[in-house]
Image 1 (cartoon, rainbow, N blue to C red):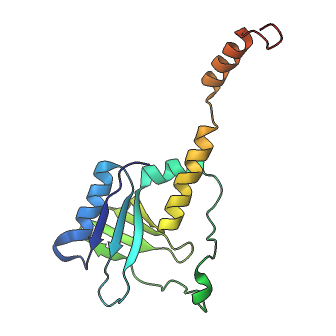
Image 2 (image 1 turned 90 degrees about the vertical axis):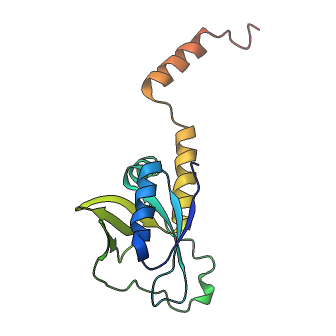
Image 3 (image 1 turned 120 degrees about the horizontal axis):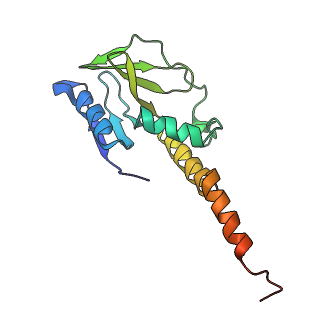
Length: 157
């Protein structure tokens, strides 16, 4: 669904984060990003979804994502996200949410994108596709019903 771009971002040297966020806005599609945060040994892989695209997904997928728990047997205790001050990267500010694990990305006080777990992003895309395939807007539905009404019944054929 859309363009897939894989980007590795280190600590924001030379405004890397700002460029990736600008790219997401320009293509208006999700971008998979691997963050190599300073002081962390493990890379963080997320999907950067422009705010308008996420709003559309959440419109068509009205149920909330719940992690399946698969693969979490290795983790004895679920990690609670650390409370931290917003992180500023050029014109963008990242606000990590303690609930849900998402990170809102704002520019000049307006949320322009969100960082989602790759599993959640995939789940949303699948849910949207499945729901939209079964949906007809009212005009399309009326036209289809009219078309069906004009068809000969199976007994007449």
